[in-house]
Length: 322
Image (cartoon, rainbow, N blue to C red; front, side):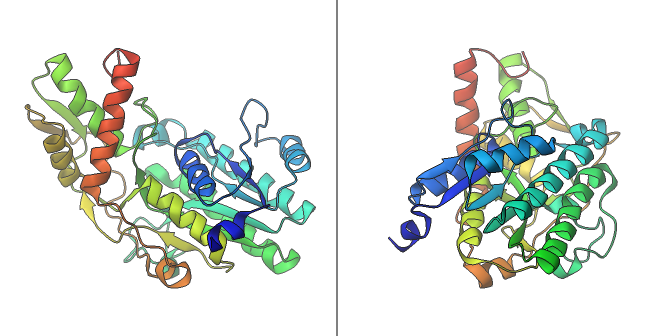
């Protein structure tokens, strides 16, 4: 009841609320009794344009905004679209923060990314956030997101704007993009494993050598963390959301192969990039400051994503990539 009382009557905008992460945030808010939700659609509000953002604030009259919209994808998409990813993510965030300042918004929640961390960070702790340049493939995307923290802290200092900044580990789960150009690693591996049987492939080929590690955060757990932070955290410092569990891409692939009953071997194309060598997020601050603790194991989360993707295949009446 206490959490429902927190949200009752509040007008909340979730940008990107129809997308992968955003739809899970919306679900978590509705479960808490948030009854005044606005989900701006891109065909109505192109957040890259200042006048669209101004109109959104005027029409929605929000008490708070969770900014989850963004241009994002896997390694291939980042390699193909560094300029687009930098511009889209940077300009949307710039306009949202400035728009929030102009209307005196009570609270703005910004979603950052683990791609902003230095390539060779000794630890993915918030205090290490500025200790180097990001991994090159993801640098444009990561730096665009990172600059929003600078703007948020500057606006807090000068204008008193209450903006919090959350850094998310690698997300996965139901609702991910299925197109190969923009999907993330879990989805890409699952679709190749599911495709193999239908196409009678003699093997599946994955990028790199399988050695990089990632911290995989189930999307519904991430949404829970975002909502908890929105309720309980008002600090200027960034906060990581992750599991603290490090999994190699090779281990991930072997787990997906087992869960999908893959019957052909996995080979690694070492001419393709690995991406960042290592990622494991320290989520101590999130646990201490607003009680965030992920609930979903990697195996259970993958089972749910696989079941969702199998359902998507049946609904489309065809194989992935056809």
